[in-house]
Length: 353
Image 1 (tube, rainbow, N blue to C red):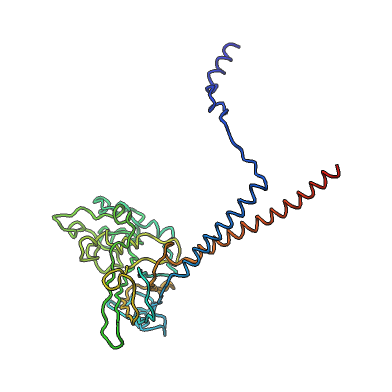
Image 2: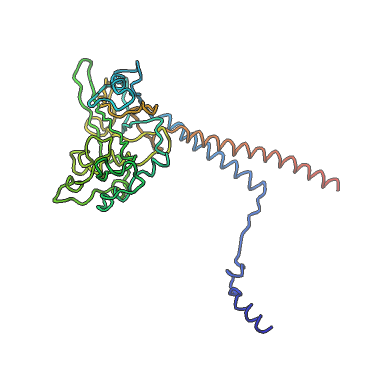
């Protein structure tokens, strides 16, 4: 008895309020006077926020153009027909003309959009080497197996950057021109291509390997570009602060999209006479048509858009808040009717007693 009591006492928790579960506790008793106002207040709050989001989204201007090149859709169809579903011939270009009858309020963002492109495919999404993209020299020479079949070139050289995501880099380019007066000359609108990538991606996740004798080309010596690329990664831009693995376009592309239809930021229009927006007049977008999309049944578009306090155009968010708020208020009324009905029934039963 003495041994068992001692053993039992050794395994007992300390005699404290926490271990003995004697801490003060509060358990809410939900009644109709508490629950119904909560539902009505939550519903009104959601509806108010939903209305603000919906009307703010509707106030955002967008201008979109599909330049895939389907037959009869514009002069980009020449480039698409020349490619016949494969990569179009090099230096194929087309143009899109449009007019703005009124001022297009800035800041204006230029996006490219792809459809039916599944960047969320599992094998596609893991086909990259984050250690290589962070500039590690060992990973540069020995890409991970997830990059296969874009791991080594036909000559046996390691591919940098490796993987299917890098190999499918979007490589169309755009320039914007403005004609202020009818019949007058076109003036190029400056496109700001800096700061289009996420700060964490550009400053943390992506790094070039250490320079060799001050040269980035020597740092990548002994590697091969992805099969679909026409130039090595260290020649993506003449700007030394925007080439290699830290090229802004490359960093933006490497952040994969969750849906098969997605937009990615190409440039901002916020310099010179266009810092406040796009004035009225005729515009021309020169398009360098490189990226093949007809082979997978996709489309490619360019989009001009401004933003509001809530970001870009997204009517779904406002509609979702309106629906949830309406459901909260409807549920509150149903509970109120049930409460009144059974409250009256309880009062009758008490009177009968």
